[in-house]
Amino acid sequence: MYSLKQAAEAVGRGKPAILRAIQKGIISGTRSAKNEWLIDPAELHRVYPPIARSDSQSVQTERGATPDAAVVLQRENELLKEQIELLRDEKQDLRRRLDQSEEERRETQGKLTAILTYQPEQKAEAQPEPIAKKSGLLEKLFGRDKTKM
Image (cartoon, rainbow, N blue to C red; front, side, top):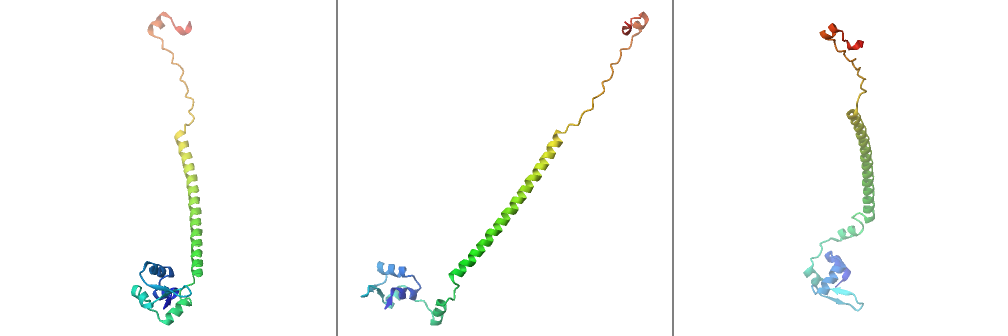
């Protein structure tokens, strides 16, 4: 007879899964005098196939053939920190580029505004002196020159 823990290990399931199967009537189990579940191996393996493991494999797995969770989490944490640092560097680079681009845009806009609004000083055009009206023949003959009056 398996205990609840032994049954879970024998089929590669968790204790809650085995207990639910007992409570739903999928497999049968009895309570011992110590109020522990006892499960018949034949009844258990009728529903759940046994995990085929040799003793050397189970001992190797128990002794840490898989990496320790703390080591895995620590490595993951380091990788995440590296990613954060890379993202910060990228953000800083993009910010610098944006500031530089904005400065260039302002300079170019200033130059364009200066070109469009440029009005060179216009030299005061020399006003031609009014052309004196030439005296006609009659005026010369009769002596009516207005300038002499």
